[in-house]
Image 1: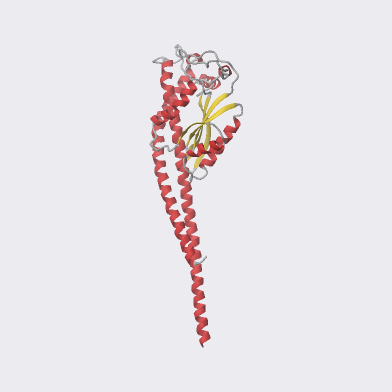
Image 2 (image 1 turned 30 degrees about the vertical axis):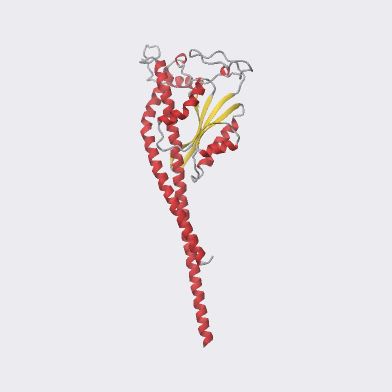
Length: 329
């Protein structure tokens, strides 16, 4: 390239460097805000987790009746009604007897970003989500997409999109979370859904984000509850009170569960959404930082090339002048 082309390329790379540096600063600001929200919610979330652990560990199985806590058994999977046959409905808080035979209905909530330029964040997440969906051979699976990238990905896969939420703000709050999860919780309580899974990226630090697949509903299976009780019975400090549940609960445990479980679900989902958003902004911040460094290296190399080309041009002109002077002698 001649010197004019090199100068034009240096100018364009320098403009790109300004953009990537600005994007890095914006992502760093958003990451700091999200991390502040995470730090604020962790003590509240930890206390709720402690309360739930105590309730599920020391309450007998017959006292755990909340629909969000128990897994569907095979007897509770109904067959779609035949033509002219009414679907079972909820009457008086109970469901009529249902027939067996249908597949499980699963919703996977996939949390991606709306935009790219965040390194391998979306690629790793969607690869994990695609592997999870491919493993669900004996189930009817639907997708709830948080972020435009996951919505576009599963549309190409021709999977049913139950709901799509994009342009999530860093000012996200419990009201927004409740609005997003409301239809899913309602479908689970009416047995239209059997399981809800979350696919998101766990935030470790700005350089490390780990894709995770975790079951969101039901919260615990019977085997997991029994395992908790077994481990609690081995502890020396377990309660020895002569009480119906080992602990004295006020008010009644069922009332406590009815109040705690919905709040626990909201807090857990809210914290996972914050984890996903922190992972996105951390990945974008590092990607833009690396892009800025690469732009600086390209500018240094182009500047060196420009100086060499200019030096070669000056040397050539001097040789022409000297040669002309010698010819005139």
